[in-house]
Image (cartoon, rainbow, N blue to C red):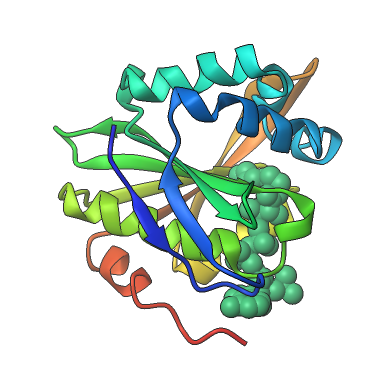
Length: 192
Ligand SMILES: CC(C)(COP(=O)(O)OP(=O)(O)OC[C@H]1O[C@@H](n2cnc3c(N)ncnc32)[C@H](O)[C@@H]1OP(=O)(O)O)[C@@H](O)C(=O)NCCC(=O)NCCS
């Protein structure tokens, strides 16, 4: 798995770092998911099974093993706790494509934390010669769509009834960031 350890400039006080998560981080990972489980579960399928250390360890291990193109899981640490994260998955070297995913706990939302982490993930993807990054989100997930657009992603279409989430069929909006647009995203506008 990719090795990432970089400082992030965000609206949170103190030092904030983004670094690759390993099996040893499973307890901290489960703790931050469990602390915000109802909110994180609204649009994400995996928080329920990662809110305990065993489930978190198995989820992190899939990235460590590089299963199905999983290339990166990295967490944002602030004041010694995990507050957010990014993943790069579904990497296909043949087509030079990858998918970017992200989350934050509620206390780190609205402070540019995930945006800054996404920029670092995009930088890594570009270093692997990726030419197309996809962003998948629920059409009702306004904050996710807003972040994608702020990073320069364009909405390309909606996959209707694309997967089940807790008994309900859900749609998926697919955003794309391609070629030079990825480079443009690496130098974001100044924070407010
Ligand atoms: C989707 C999600 C990751 C978006 O996070 P976010 O915090 O809104 O995104 P950003 O990190 O880009 O932060 C943007 C906000 O920080 C502000 N900001 C940006 N840089 C800043 C800085 N340096 N200092 C202070 N504020 C800053 C922006 O003005 C913006 O403010 P606003 O919320 O008032 O518009 C988050 O809502 C989340 O985790 N939701 C639950 C899980 C989820 O849905 N994941 C995505 C699945 S597709």
